[in-house]
Image 1 (cartoon, rainbow, N blue to C red):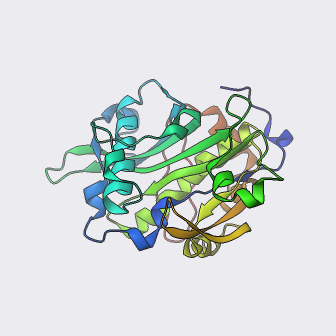
Image 2: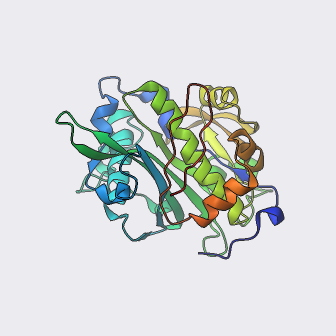
Image 3: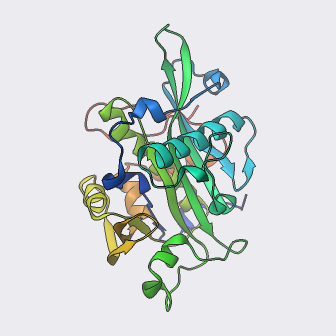
Length: 288
């Protein structure tokens, strides 16, 4: 991992939100959220925090799964496959691997995040479930190839390609039976992504979403700037647009102070334990 700069020296940066699961035109309403959420065997995540309901953290850097995160990474791949192949039909089932997981060529240059729920089953036993995922695709000195957004909107990027370093967030998934909890899960993922981007001095990139998702993100308080109008993208069989969002502003929206971000930087590589807030409040990470 790279040397982390002090937060007061980090320049303005942007986060790309590449939110495929919101392609509402393809969602199969017959596939319930509980059908796509994988159960895993990872009680050790909560050994020191048995009453915590959620744990969130980085589980892999490129193809290197972090120590203790092998089972979570497997669940992360299962969640991706079930959502994209079974529920939203964003990918063909033939792209799902024999073990039921989904990966692609961008995983090798990505930082991978997951949210694990420490749930209670029908027998009142603890069971762990992967309920959220996100990856940051990196464009850096080691991986200078174009980001997906640059390929989808080549006209906008031919003369002004995304700089090195930059990032694009993709495989963003939040799934839960309780709609309020599902709506909340995005915030810990955003927090983790923002903290990583700011700590590593990553520059600007872009996001690709359908217009209704753009409106939803704006409604949630994100200040985003559209950089390309909707065009039909064959891979998603839908019209999508490109936008950017200032991560420093997003940190303020998330109510993260410099000390919060510093605490999260120090916790990088370990799971932290976000708490579902009272109705309408924004969460903060609770670091063990």
